[in-house]
Length: 391
Image (cartoon, rainbow, N blue to C red; front, side, top):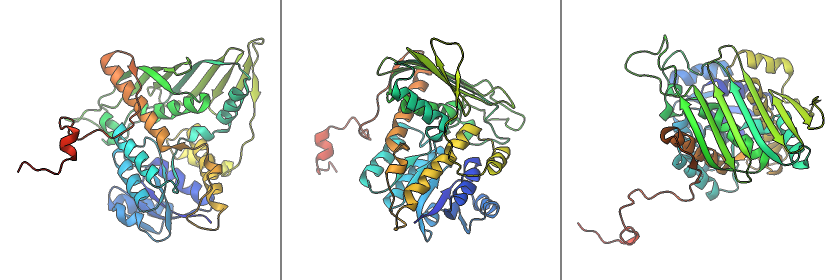
């Protein structure tokens, strides 16, 4: 039985996700917005019965068992932790948080409640072309993987008015928007994680016609970084948001015996013995109709590969919930390939390391947080454990 859903956010991702959720027979019971006006307007457009600007009201709405979060990154972690704490399943769209600490708190909450679903919406994992690419890699069709290159070219990510997308410290920029998904994809394809990273972030556009005055844009509009994986694979990723009206999403995986090229949703397999590639057409499960997909793409700034991946994720989410008689129960097998909060913590760690590398101009070791840091590191453990008071 499918659970009722509360969505948090009113942006383009939610505007696309709600119609897909409804097409998959989910009931969207409530929507939360930053302001009451935003929430009411979104509820009217998306035909959602309840709207609010108070987190608790949305979480406690009747019949809500699953929470879908896609709002300002600094709010996503607190909402996810609170939702898990009161027994709600969580699907959190990336970026999960602003820092390792925020994401680590999500991991801790998910560990406390292992019976609850806690997944991250890295939709590229479910894009048929990339799932087929992973199958070829696992089968050894291109030999041992040696080099991975990926690039995203797109127009500006900035809105007309100043918002969190303009601030690096609030989660804006191409690294957070597209880089995190590609970092996760590399691990998904290779089963390996980055050990060292080297990156460069640039902000070339610090003002626009609608964003001027005291506040300047600090989010990155260009990013290039390299990763060394644990098995010796070299990864190079380039993100460029200076091409208006264009979107290019390409992933190249080179092996000792061949290579795979994924351009958008198209997969090609090349053998080192031949210059001609074989176009692979993987089976595609139809979650929504092609006309509906084209309509969503026309009315959103989300790119086709990312939106197609998200729709496939919603499809497996439906499978996980529909095969049970209890609205609150779910099956792990259909969503076993979905990214977990632990995966989000790793991605956030790599992003933080890339930012550090850009500041220091040095390679940085990737070290995932395993425990929450002490609020006051100068206090000894004996003092922290003691109940003695000096006052």
